[in-house]
Image (cartoon, rainbow, N blue to C red; front, side, top):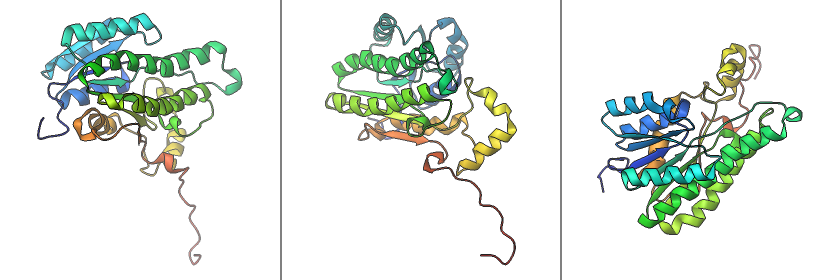
Length: 267
């Protein structure tokens, strides 16, 4: 074991949903800590540029097609990883989607798309990878949740239900698989600009309102998640399981707003 408990040298990490956004930031952070990667997307062709980037950092990257809503696709991905690398040490369940609508406008198909991707997909990818991890008595599973895992927001009913489910699922799987040397934790980002929500950040008034509710007074930057994902993937978190780590600038503490200025002489 390395003297540095955060060192991931020699580890193999699978990051789902790595064609863009936070998935790529998670991958970069793990690579910089020493891991080799498996990167997945529904279309593996969308991963080639990221694969080349990882290789310029001196690490290996295996791009694979994966549809987390398809059971056979999940099993094929796990088999391909084991055939290529011989093991899976770390799983980051990042693949997800959202349909932002008022609750009365959400359709049956909207609900199924979001829950099948974010919740059912997380479970069955975890299950497929854990079967392999159990043979080695070692594993780090990181489920990506959200501040909506613990707080409700209008227009995010199915999404919040899926992320709240990921939080509960994390605790259950931690209890199931702890005896096999597998830790399962949930990394829950707050408000970060991604491809899914980029249009919202074009509204400067909304960004100012959001920032006022965050104790650190700004939305998250992708690299704000680097330390958390490396920690949960490494031996530094060996005795941590079933937990949800909120990286949200403090917004989950409550709706924090600046107090109005009072006239001089008033206490």
